[in-house]
Image (cartoon, rainbow, N blue to C red; front, top):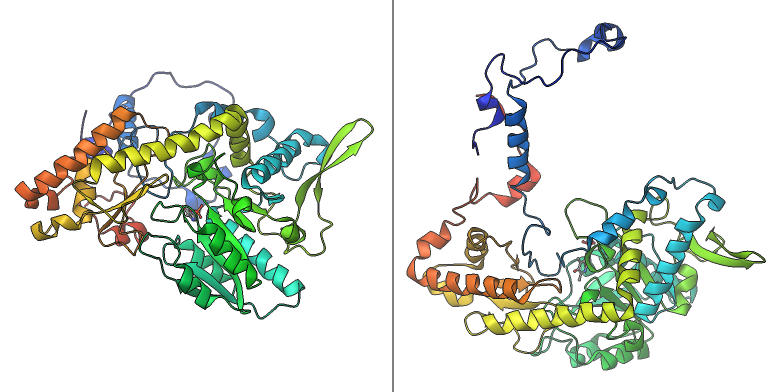
Length: 488
Ligand SMILES: *Cc1c(COP(=O)(O)O)cnc(C)c1O
């Protein structure tokens, strides 16, 4: 396949015509009569190539992208798993894609029913009682949940509760969303097993604390062994427990966060339930809350009334204590439909299998690697684990270099340098949808890279060697991307 850019292939007069000139009425319309003169250009420098070259060019470009359908994507915390195509098929049905959010309720009863039932499923999974589907992402769910908690304290005349306790193993969005609510973030340190340090927590709770925000499993991929004690300490101080449930694929059907003392939590439908995280598409971060927080949820909530001829679904705006809207319309409906299809197609047993496999895959991979790469915390993990690449420091090889070398082996790198509390961190999430063969191949690659790093450190430091571009200035590439080819 040609490696040349389309502009470089261009030569005057080159083209392909598969159809003759059209002879339909109107083909001779004078464009200059339809468009303002300023937008019509005579001297457009367009490449002249054959259709075959054009297709080759765009197909080649499209393959530069790594994808969840194309390969193993162990990007810790992001759950870049395979998403069953049936969910996409259901989400693409015209009855879902061709409705409008401003249509009268009686014409979209099916859509409202799906939302209503999805609220119910998420309540069941969380062990909590009410759900809003509005938030458009995980971080947006956190923001909504913290606003609800804030409103709850205010309503009780407890307006002085302005502190949010956030463990140092929390996801970065947790302190960020708390700060956005005007709350003050105070760090809680981890103990030597990677859980919340209970004594530190005890010394920090007070009548000024609004909530503890707990990422669970935390960013080390660990379940907090003391969670019952942790939530009871928080509750005894009159504060609430917010759980970041973005990584529910670790716990689906195994435990309900509500049973562990959680008062409010969010889900990432675009991680756990049938839609990939990232990739520029929409997300959905529903929030589930305990009964006492339900009145504060954003409006509208999808509700049901039973009439003589069955159930009717409607958008309930009559909620005087609501924090108001957090998003235009009703959230990202398409993602909700995929989540609904995912939950309905798997059923309770299937969901349980998801978490069993997520945890099994992560522990299997962790065991293959931990003899070579040191584990940050050596105990069974949940859906992901954190290694450190610091054993290669003497070679001058860093985790970044290992990640880049993985690309040569055909794998997407894991999340690196996060969580911040682990030096040279590599956060690996194999997800539940990978086969043992893929996990073995990935482990082989990481083990080989470790040997290569000793034998040929310079080669690793210059990786990747198989991609069109090598080491980019990632910050500049993201902030000032050069997206157009210009003739020199
Ligand atoms: C992904 C993630 C988030 C943020 O979700 P977004 O949809 O990207 O905003 C928050 N917390 C945890 C633990 C996550 O893994």
